[in-house]
Image 1 (cartoon, rainbow, N blue to C red):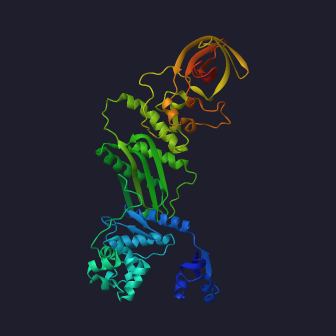
Image 2: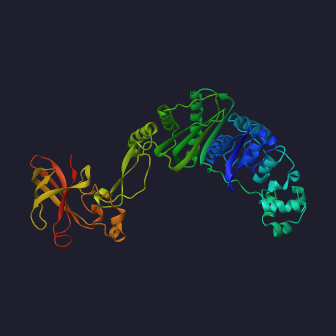
Amino acid sequence: MTVFTEKQANAVRLTALSREALAAGLTTGLTLADARARLPGLVAIERDHTAEARLLARAVEACRAYSPVVAPAPSDGIVLDIAGCTHAYGSEDGLVADLARRLRRQGLTLRLGLGDTPEAARARARFGAGPEADLLALPVEALEASPEITLALRRAGLKRIMDLACRPRRMLAARFGDLALRLGRLLGEEDRRITPERLIDPVFGLRRFAEPIGRVEDGLACLADLLAEAGATLLERHEGGRRFVARFFRSDGAVPGLVVETGRPVRDPGIVMRLFRERLEALADPIDPGFGFDCIRLDVPVTEPLAPAQDGLGGEDRAAAPLAELVDRLVARLGADRIARVAPLDSHIPECAVAIVPAATEPHWPAPFPDDPPLRPLRLLDPPQPIEVTYGLPEGPPRRFVWQRRAHEVARWEGPERIAAEWWRRRIGAETWLRRDADDHPLPLPLCASGRTRDYYRVEDKAGHRFWLFRHGLAGGETEMPAWYVHGLFA
């Protein structure tokens, strides 16, 4: 026989027991030493709450095939709202029987209860003799009040729920605090709604099968039907999906899933189905149907407004569609963190004007310039590289510069383009916020936090190479001797 132990009050005590241990007379709270004295062959295992939480999460996921409103009741319970969910099983008893079969295949021991409120169902499961046990006959422990209140009730001779139900509630509230509220919820006089662990997705579809299907292709065909239904719902709502989640509920309780994301809202079932197939082919561990799928669920947890398109108009959108579909296919095959794009930021400092973001996201950041900005190189050096420059004092253009021990004679130049520092960032302490690795940066502070003005020049040397240089600081005002840097290279 097996027991689970924890260290409590400087002693190792029993906290969970197998049926054989209970039948042998052991109880929770007993020290392990006393238990071994009674049963020398006892097998004791240290309790792992993390593993129990993972097991409970798996069971919660399996229960989503029966109701969209599922919530864990730690550490060993699950509550489902099955109102309106019994039509596929004929009755509540049919749903309960099917749920019991699914969870038992996962190796779980079940105690089921039904009730008009979560408290009533939980009390029948924990203290009753069956899903329809008489609530009035249950012990007062079914109220799950504190041990002190439960002990006081028993000492007063109030041992069952029926002993409390006939008492004035005002008296119980004055003597035992929230006991009257617990009693009302248990008897169905007040309903406390279930708060699901995950909110119901705006658009979802569910398909159950009388007999499990054993081929992944059949499951994908069903998924295509669900996508068509979801697309019709999204069209009615003038929305498109940005994230689609498919879950395949296996007969043994496992729930493999697929997730795809799109760079813009879509509701075309064909586009989303191609992404699901791409994702399925990219899995290192393919989905195994096992003994078959008895339920498939599609969720669209992220939606955005999408106005209906009219044929013959919106040519620009249609031109951008192939690129968006290509990005979505690459993300589905390689992963969202492998494909990125450049997004503009609201800053006129070149190295701070863009950010690398996942390609599937659609940021709503403003562009830094209302008009076309001056010509910028496609390749920026990070950090800018220091150079030695020959120029006319105090603010003349560069005539010759040395970079990486190689001299370049300037044949043509254009500029300067003056960029002031972001003084408002400096005032709030941007020197620390924007500081980079001091070992890799040639300056004590990054350039965008130094508070100095930059004069940028586009130059071309006699060999035809083009560079983007800048003078850092105004002579006489911000620094005695301005430094020069090469910030980018033109193709």
